[in-house]
Image (cartoon, helix red, strand yellow):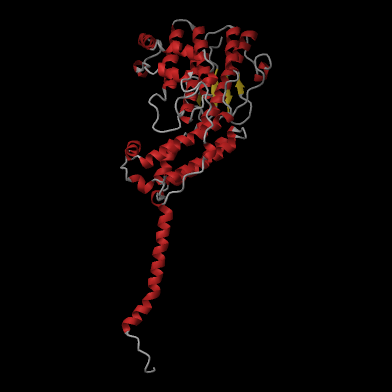
Length: 434
């Protein structure tokens, strides 16, 4: 060692030995900080310009549908929700009260049905923003509570043909609402109205033996079923509603607490609105691509696979700790109308089976026997053998059991249609065997 060299002190040696560890520690902390930042940060708003609807004016803001909703808003509901045994004096009294209390609904309905349904438009933003309108379910309630009750009232008093024509008008009402540019909230009501109309029509026609009346009803119902193309704008509008819901959650603490029953600070940890909306956009774009092919089965299968994957991840034990948007995913899954494709395709099947049953009844009245195959109905009573919308196979017919059968996936509960254990949709003939 030369005289100019200063020997290193023990303290300096320790400092030199620690330096690499300090540098490594700083790097680790920076990496962890970056990881936490990218893990917890939200995405940029989704690029959904292609989902912006091209609204048409129709009849304008005061179109016939808006006026009808306003006129029927005082709908009387009370006795409807009671439990009464059919055929009892109590049930007859219930029908009397509901028809009398809702007498103002029927002229409003007749006035609406006399207008051009192409002018109908749902009010305001047409069900694409949150909070929802107080009267957003009024059309479904009118159909279920007032119109269906009136059909049953007419049947009870022996006016079955008038009841049948009202049920047919309910079908046309649902079809008109389907064209009124509504979001998924309004569209789900269309499916329910069609189901109620079908059940009431079957009730009204149970003892009908006039081939002319049956043919008239069949003609009225032909051509008013949904197409895959009808569902695409509904799915796009559903994204607008989802966007409004999650923006409300993120920016309105009171609304968040009301929606979720959780403390407003909760969303800061487990909700990333834009990540949720990107997920929603991905789902809807894939679904629309399937629907554009016109294949109900493909769209349903793809939808189920996507949702099953999301739900499987959401159910994992560590999901809440490994995904800062765990709450957003859960809320998205709850708000999403998951069965929109399935319910629509099932409704198409049930509508086709109803029309087929009318053709079978007309054949029976003409030949004094049931057809052996559905091909026997072609071309006099049906233009072609009906096809199952879910699998493109012909709807089946069992004359021994007096049942039509579609190998669909599911059928919601109904007094006419019911689901067997294997998921087939069975449609029993609605008139008594001779």
